[in-house]
Image (cartoon, rainbow, N blue to C red; front, side, top):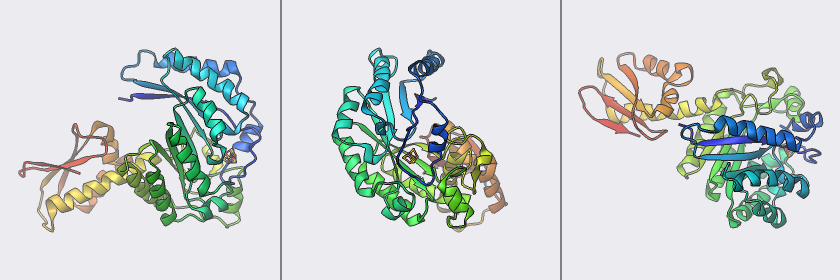
Length: 353
Ligand code: SF4
């Protein structure tokens, strides 16, 4: 049951002076006017009416997305924040959430966010590797990331960190380094985005000229899986893995390369589930034996059942073909999300990983 609901308000950063190679927002927002006060109120009211009475929802957040909320003029920030704040003081929402860049954080900005009772500040960090940041045209370095994260935490805000996978000059090592550095900073939440090549971006030009080689889907899944494991082991809640088709993508035909997959999170969590299932089977049961026709049952929580089965049943197919002499079944069990258990008929116990 989903306990958390987010009311997304997209605030484009009109006139953004930066040149991130992967960004198509400047082209999109050039064609889009700012959201009016009425449009924002309408959006919030519509969401609230659909959420009212929905069982299990404990926290509702108004979230200002668009990348650089604190890069817009302070008066405009205050105008948007005042609307969210009035819903919070009436008890209609519980949290105010926004996303921005590390170099758009300072004391004056944070004082203003605190005055409007903002709860969560997510930073588009993308990488902790200065070579990657430079090659991606981010316009900030890793020192500004550490400084912004520490300042946000010193003010008592919840910190969110967004990382990208497969940017120019990136490697598996630099992605894992970024995940480790992010984990050390102790954010509450994180998002992991494999780089997607969008139309109307510098990255598309680099791709078309052959100067940028995107990751293959399997590589992107493998790297993201390891980052996911590092962050969750540090207690970070990963609230997004991969872009949704509705995010920045108007039309899937506007995407090149192989790194966009609408179910990317399931690919990553399915790979994690498969790894655990393999380890359980090999270490806890087979241990070098080759038993014929043993009945093996894998268990997961109801929420993780589709990950255990794998995208389009790929984990089921994998085990059936790798171990044709064994019989597999898949069931739900009241385990924590992400845990997998195994039981073997006749051996009467359940081992959990
Ligand atoms: S991603 Fe970069 S270029 Fe695009 S709006 Fe954000 S800061 Fe500006």
